[in-house]
Amino acid sequence: MSQDVSHENHVYEIFAMRQRDPKVTSQWAESEVFPLFFEISAFISSTIKAMKVEGLIERSGCVLTQNRDLEFLHSFKDFPIFMGCTSRPLAEDLHEDMNWFISRSSGVIQLNPLIPPEILYANAHNEALGGVWTQHHAEFSAFISQFKPKSIIEMGGANALLAKNYLKQNPTAEWTLVDPNAGESNDLRIRKISGFVDSRFRVKGSFDAIVQSHLFEHLYQPSEFMESISNQTRTGQYLFFSIPNMRSLLSQSYLNCLNFEHTVFLDDDHICSLLKRSDFEILEKKHFMDHSIFYAAVKTTKRPQPPFSNLYDQNKKMFLNFIDTYSKWVSETNKRIVHENLPIWLFGGHIFSQFLISFGLNTSKVHGILDNGQLKIGKRLYGTSFSVESPQILKGKGPAIVILKAASYNTEIKRQILETVNDQVIFWE
Image 1 (cartoon, rainbow, N blue to C red):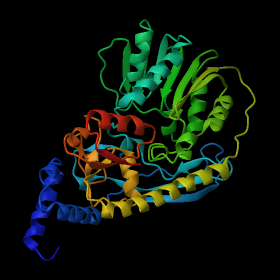
Image 2: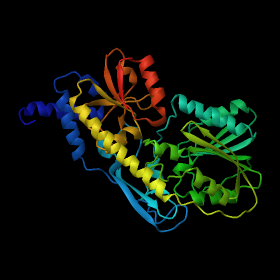
Image 3: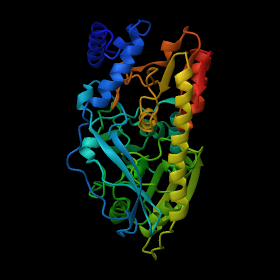
Image 4: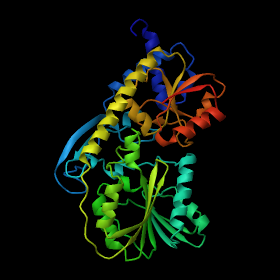
């Protein structure tokens, strides 16, 4: 770099422009300074001191057994805390060590310490896009409809997609949702309340059912939360929820299983025990692809509390295999990147890309991030200097490499790009 100082200064100027306007990257993609731009931008990103989070929440013991028996497993150093995109400067991004432990008495994998919720959820990031989520909401809505509740309280669900699905099938029902990012609704049957849902949350008013869709994995104190729900429900009232099929996700080494938001690995065995210990009888369960599990439960009278199974050996083995799998995959992919001359893109303005980078993915030849979320386009992936583009940027551009590690969504993403954008794209999975 020292052989041409004016060239270097010019690239620093481009980097600064990129922070103000991420789309500037594409204007220089074919220029002679493009490779140097990536070299210097990577250097600058690595030398910016990561801003840390204040007020971290310590976990002193297992979230299920309360035993102080947490065993350290792995740490992702200086990981970005927000799994979304931002228009704010890179220097404002917050990072924290993502430290994973396992309870020796239950086998529950859990994060410690935790990010304060008001910081972690300061901004929304999940648009629930694509065929998988559309099908999920339709099937979960139909699953709930079997029991015909008329007055529903949904904990979470800022986008109201599940509520809209249910109300199409049950037009006389009423739906209240509580979420820190709840916005206004034009449907008078949907009432939105802005607020966090945790063990301190109190249900107000009459209701037939409580509904949660991919909320449970976000709870910091699942046992206390279920105790609170049990104390606020009467015999005969329903609880419906959908959670990620965490055992399926982690066994396949999916990158969206555990993170700063999904802080506890709870599989079906422990979920069932939690329900029974909270005086809920499971009426029905349904697996949705390898993605989620639906539960329908009803409040009953007091019953004996079953002990939690100890899944220590199998959970520890599965988690360490996840770490080993990606360490090896990234190492092999980096070798391919060094010798690759085609344009390289990374798919996912989300946790998928952040994890790959944290595992050490060589981004020196990566042009940018691709994502279908319209709210992400033109913004920067949090914790990185990469701007997000629509896959349409590949249209008519000939062969290109797309690194794709998007868990259950890989198939629909590949189909969309190959059939509607560019059939010459080569996917590295």
